[in-house]
Amino acid sequence: MKLAGLKPEPGSTKRKKRIGRGPGSGHGKTSGRGHTGAGQHSAPRHDARFEGGQMPFYRRIPKRGFVNPTRKEYAAVNIGDLAELDAAVVTIELLRERGLVGRSESVKILGGGELGRALSVTAHAFSKTAREKIEKAGGKAVTQNASRKTPDAGSEGRGA
Image (cartoon, rainbow, N blue to C red):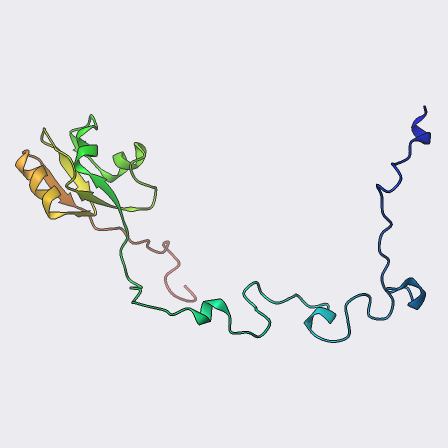
């Protein structure tokens, strides 16, 4: 057996459909695209939500309620989680290092669990019970404002 003598099994390969090669090919003239409509054109097809002119699903279903565009999302950390840390001062950076919160999330301390020792805790927000439990244990709850990104020096306004 030689490499040059190898052939695929009969029926396992198929010839490429050559479109637009005259009426004798069976795929001439409109090249298998039909006569009119969006499918005839070379431009991109409809977007995935298009339903052939029927009222699309996303417009048929009712919209309810109100979505607050200025809503503040917080990563929640319970007091019980802070008690397990071996630090006396708990900062947002420490919580990020330990993987309790994500990199760019604002942090809110909640009152779940118990705190047996005094901690100084810095976060963007505290629940009422969390603040009470921290202060009852002899620690303090420090609220830090979420920092806003400031433009680089030298890029103030147009034409600066």
